[in-house]
Length: 357
Image (cartoon, rainbow, N blue to C red; front, side, top):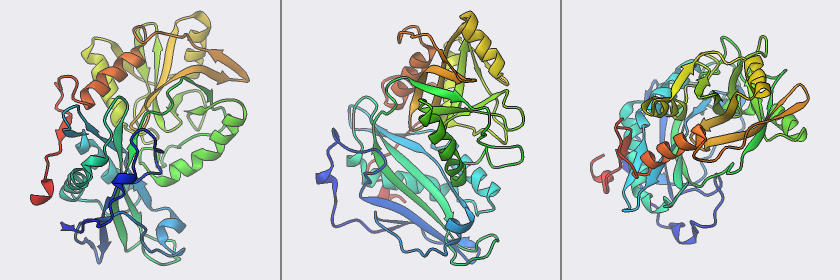
């Protein structure tokens, strides 16, 4: 790894009690370029702009994918990643689906650890606080030709993070727009998936909702995801979540919730979730809660579902009654080293890791 440390750290200007998630970037980033059929040297360099032209193929033809993950700092200042091998596996799954070169485990994991180590002082401590990390791959060849690019960049950037969506939100069950289709790229974290979701979300916001529950593209009769999250439904004391597929992203937080629920002895059914079933459960009082999970938000609890022009209110549960709140606490306690880790999910980032990579 080639290392170029910044001479102008911006850390002294960072207020961990007053910052904007997604707009505040740490001092360094990782980059690696692909050309002539192979990846070059991994470089850890000062964060900043990279020169590109409007003819860059990633902009014109959409060869771009990314991951979302976090680093956490415990009360003793120790820093941990959470299940980074899952993100490594998934970014390569996305790259393969978009006909881009896969990255090596060494590039991905060593790059992550080096970046988090050198900028560990940027990681805020406290409840809901973390460092959000964005590994990404995108086409960089300068050519207006609708074909697979010959040049790519792998990069890792990061921003301090705090909780958002702290209050329950209302979501509209989509009856027209879909996030993904059979044979498409729904199971990849393709950048274009997010661009396509913005317009339907804007329409839902104009109707008084904060987000959308995406339904299947052919019938709109089954839940798939919610916004940028996987979705869970609790009817009585059973949790239901749609199975992953080529349309539904295999979320790391989703998998963690499932395993934590099973550890608690909560019944989890991974099966198609019918809109009709959820609506009927709301009407007969057996629908206890619906929520979304993802790396950035961890958990967002829904207070109402919009369906066929009607807003269906959900029960207001205490943290002790809510499976969503209970499992969120189990997860965040594990991530922040406040509880035992029977799964081996926490990965400590040793200090001075740069000396070994």
